[in-house]
Length: 175
Image: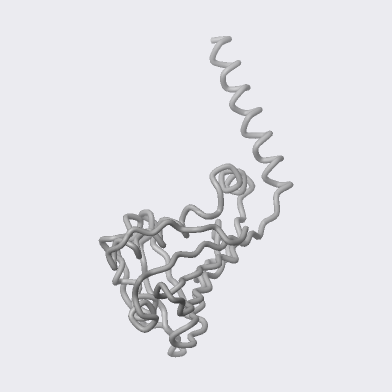
């Protein structure tokens, strides 16, 4: 019985230290990654505008469909990593930029925006995605600090390489 109490106390101390550390970390973060695709900018932008195009190539994305939203705003209901979320399209400038925002509830554990920047380069199209995000839970902030803010971005960008199909290696350019 004494052993179990010591284990429970040890776990409580670890969680307490992680929560204290997480509370000292900033709620907001910025991360950016980019790839170059050997495709014309218009063809790449068509995929930016249709998130459902990556179902089957991005393992985290199991569902994406356009949703009806009050006020006529464009939105997509997606299931990413098993979690349902609504993504609002907040700005579009074809064929070079789109900004999306997670339609986060007031009690959500994370949220933020992704800004897609496309630029024609000699090799094809450079795609840079910048995440301006926030993480509410101090424990999740610790996990994000330990594992990095780029994981979702880079998995998403690698899926673009599978979609087109070509090998890509995301490059971290911010955060």
